[in-house]
Image (tube, rainbow, N blue to C red):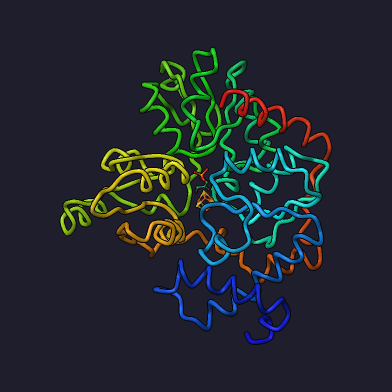
Length: 354
Ligand code: 13P
Ligand code: SF4
């Protein structure tokens, strides 16, 4: 650990330590804060040298989140930042589909993802071939895909959406039916919000029942392996012990969980909600690191934790591999030109609607 401290400028390491200490000193021991301050200073020095920008998703662990990211936010906010940047390199502290979206929106830039293990169960739940097969089964029906998909799936889509604009995107389409992929729970939540009837077609030929149904949304059974784990029972148990708690759920949670919560929104919408309200205590039903970040930014607020559920993909991104990404220029996100062109139509169309 001491090694890293000597590499950077000791004064800036000291300043970084004090910054992290003021936010995390109650929960992170000094030895770790010094270690991370040293890594962060070296990252920031290299960032300047390489003319890079670091984008950090709200799920990044607190020390990384507050020390090296130039912009922090939810998927939609980071799309805007990736699109706007004039830096040569974008280091994406998030998961692969997010780094791909940055490449799609700003293809002349070098986009680096610090770990190739940073994937996503939703993005892995559907392929471009699946989308083409759905189009064949439902000819003429427009396809909306959640940004939590890989570039080749976006390329098969008419328009993308994020957790913060899904219902708006669906409503923007002048169509009686919409294919909405791949998150089952987000689709069910959108159906609830927009009053639409949803079906999940079985594979193979459409059954008579499906043909007869007056469907308006056609979903897919992809799940977020993190948000699917929160249950109604969790909420009832927490409310029993803390009747004054305000519960915030991400729209990737099941409709039962969303309905029993007090607020539902994107990761940034949840952070804003906590910042702007003054409840006795809050519980976030989402990746646990975000609760740590909100607690650090709002020390006067009480945050309850349900931290047995972590995103194994987001957790792959560390200060260590972010430093390696800048040192050795890895891992470069490379996409076929044709995929970029087709996917960018779907993402840009979403941005126009947002
Ligand atoms: P947000 O767009 O709300 O940040 O969500 C991204 C995500 O992967 C949630 O699991
Ligand atoms: Fe994917 Fe869920 Fe992890 Fe978000 S929290 S990156 S949706 S697996």
